[in-house]
View (cartoon, rainbow over the protein chains, first blue to last red):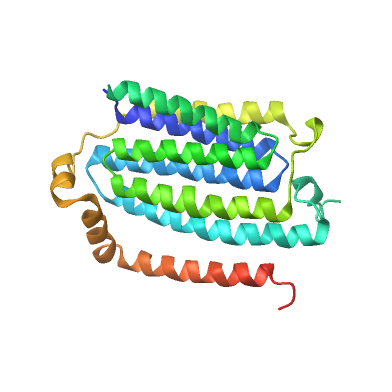
Length: 100
Length: 167
């Protein structure tokens, strides 16, 4: 029988993979996709615990996480396009205006 | 049977999540990410949340991934050379493994409370999942719902202004 611990361990694995991607990749869009992966792993935890505790609040919370992710996707991709217009590149190594 | 399905889908989701971080071409990463989202939708169905599974497929695998793939194609990004697509792999492996260890320690060390609320499998079966979500959202969580709508409006206006050449 699958318990809530299985789901939580799985979402911890997905979160670790997402953080690995955020830390290593240079391409800004891939970093963005890894952030979406981390958000989704947290959503899995929310729904598993909501099912386990017999409470609807966790699933409502997932709804709001999805809203914020959609807003983040729209604004983030607009930022990526604006940056590409200036620098002709979307690698994070080229974002070094504040570096001395 | 349920355990076998769980392990199969979990294996597929972890492997495709790994290839999101590993593929050199962003389009391949995006396709792997869609696979992960579909696996998560299967988990939501297994957890008796079918409405969340439908939303997951429509919003994430549909809308957000189309937006990302659209930007990849708009900027015409191909795959890059071997040495140019990652940095700091060893440190990142250590850090992400540490974060996994800490999370697993918390999960294994604590016990989830046995408190059982009023939403059981029978209630979901008889009322329907969508109705339960709608009731909770439009009564108890009405204020966060309105704030979310304002957030979406701000995001739309911000995206338009950021991507315009001249305001």
